[in-house]
Length: 227
Image (cartoon, rainbow, N blue to C red; front, side, top):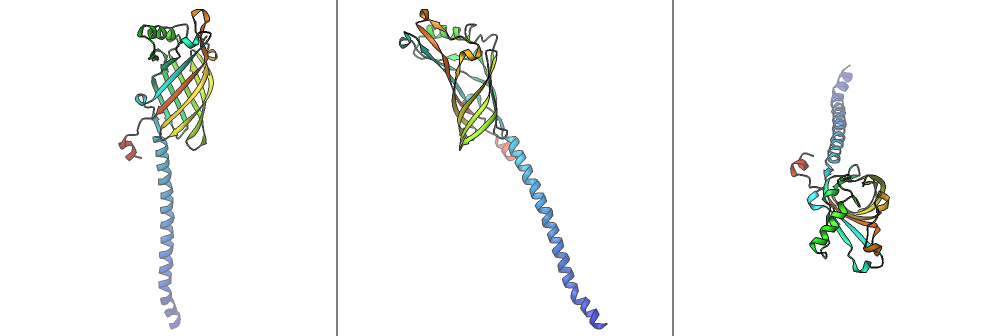
């Protein structure tokens, strides 16, 4: 019996060590689970924070209009600035939306005298071309953004212009909320007949070039700290 009692006494440290080991393992399991939850919450918060407005002051859309016809060499191509009214850049959801007020498009054409430039401006906004009083919103919406290579993306979506909505795709280059790209489109696809002047000897080409230089607004430091 004495041996039996001594054996039990000697085994007590082992039982204590085993219990301590089990407690340590349980603690590690709980900590790992909490860490996984914390990491997921952090990623979710970061994803939501990536939806930011487009920086209207530092984003530029430029439209290039080209001439054709017998005397096109004596006419100027047109350069038009299209200010952005609103927009959003969502890198997490890979979504882009840009809205332009057609009534605020401005003909730049530095080589034209002011009175001639004003004539071009009025004709562009009038019923013959944009009919901006009736169709004042131009909207580009891309819900399919594919990464072709590092910092190179293909945006597929729709462009609504002059009361017509058509599918459109464009390639852009950039990262960290700053992207540049261009696309060619035809006026006739949106119900606009290219302008002709001088008895048809000078014509505006059907195809236009649109250049985009888009920046997202910086995330405030307070928002970054709350992530």
